[in-house]
Amino acid sequence: MSHTTHQALSKVPQVTLVFWIIKIFATTLGETGGDAVSMSMNFGYLVGTVIFASVFLVAVITQIKAKRFHPLLYWATIIATTTVGTTLADYADRSLGIGYTGGTTLLFTLLILSLVIWYKIFGSVSTNTISSAKEEMFYWVTIMFSQTLGTALGDWTADTAGLGYGGGAVVFSGLLLVVLAAYLWTKISKTTLFWAAFILTRPLGAVVGDFLDKPLNQGGLALSRYSASAALLIIIVSIIFLFPQKAAKGSGH
Image 1: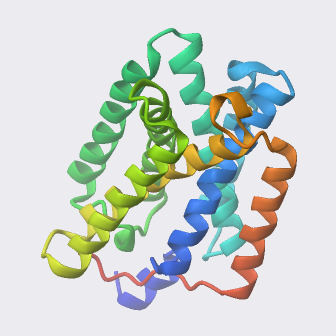
Image 2: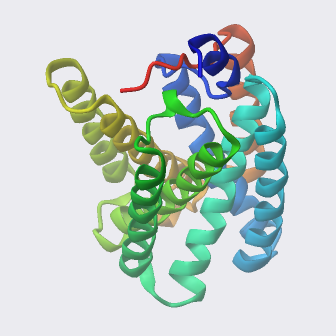
Image 3: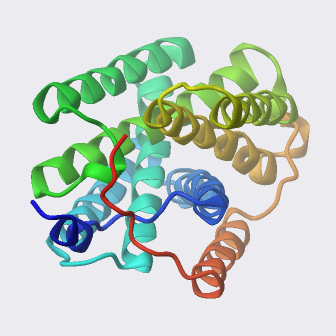
């Protein structure tokens, strides 16, 4: 496949600072939006998961059928993965009774399996080498698992480990700085570091989202989940329009 054809097929954005800023806001929105449906609207975790899973499937199918990179469509799909990840993780952790530790372990295993199978089939899990619908499906399944894991990991850190939302935010921010340092000053695979950062931004968004909307007696700010979600959505859309993103180039790692 020629470089020109590969680049034309790329439907994921270049990984820049803007990418990570939007990703953190999107994961925070996933937490407040997921909680708004499952808790504030009283649909529960299972019904909330069915609702968001349906949205996720429609978004992924639309994204895969698209012929080129569409920033709004891409980030809508990311938000869909993070909202279904929120309700699915909460359902596994709380309704199935396996707890935050069990949920985190299960989802981490599924995430690693997804990456291993993806690598075995295509020889790479770099986002810069995605050029077929099958590869793109692995990309979105892996993202969905990482978003779900992030919710469970964020809850585990804040509640089971007893660090609270502020402590959790400090931990995950610190780990992201470690990944950044590794990116700048080591020869560790850039693809490995990308997925490490991608996974870590989700629990960061989860604890920040919980901090915004949880009751005061639980360490939160007790903000309306609806208003917080709306504000986050406005911020995300504004950044997308103010800082146009380009499709990733097919360079690979």
